[in-house]
Amino acid sequence: MESFLSFLKILYSVTITGIGEDKSIWKAKVPPRVAFFTWTAALGRILTVENLRRRHVILVSWCCMCKADGESVDHLLLHCVYAKELWDLVLAMFGMCWVMPGSVRELLAAWQGKMACG
Image (cartoon, rainbow, N blue to C red; front, side):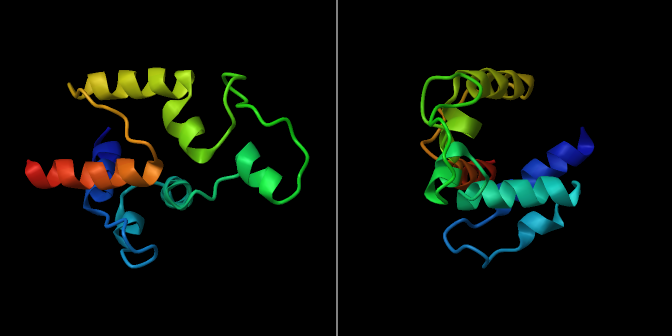
């Protein structure tokens, strides 16, 4: 749990405005693959159906979990009904009420602002 909290603290401190300018995400005490996944998600580069279709891979264009909306990075990690359930559970563990932003990038920027406020 301590490493997770350390990772959240680092995420709060990340500046999202310039990709590659702030390397603090790599300083988190989490496995490198977790930091890499977070970084690629913020860039919108994880291999979702949407990104694979851009590379001309022929796939069905709905979310693999909810079978409803298109599988974009933001849908898969934030807005899918299953992702929402997970977010609600994690945020409740920390006693937080949260309105989910529209994108992973906006989420990281909002976390940064939340940590700055206290």
